[in-house]
Image 1 (cartoon, rainbow, N blue to C red):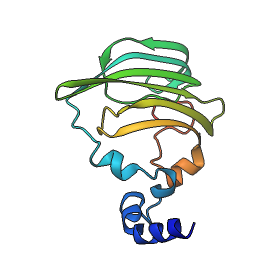
Image 2 (image 1 turned 30 degrees about the vertical axis):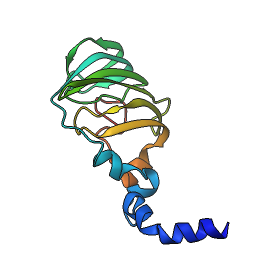
Image 3 (image 1 turned 135 degrees about the horizontal axis):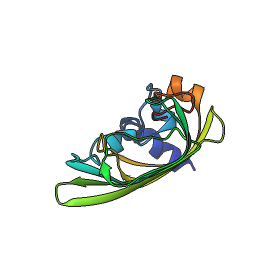
Length: 156
């Protein structure tokens, strides 16, 4: 045990460099430096294969939509603000293509659950995977936030 403690003290600089100290995202996402640095790619294109939504509020028409399904289109944004949203898109960079699946269940306005398979985000090229419960007010202060608090169109 003593050797382990000594080893951790000697190598603390290594841990601090990768896991950081002092940024709000270090505790929530300790590997963000690796994901956004050496593992990131330059995305050349991204296509959404399936965009399936249940129960959301469309802003343009001010109508509640019970069910919506969009088939292949060029990926411009994520839409995760329905009761249930399933999105599958494909990201391309250099000589590789990688699929990415997002499933978001939002049973209450303030609580949502996200499952995202490992893969690269279409807009930033960061390596990303997630299985989590999120609480909207906390995400607004500690996370990256989102555009729509209620059920209207937008990402959460």
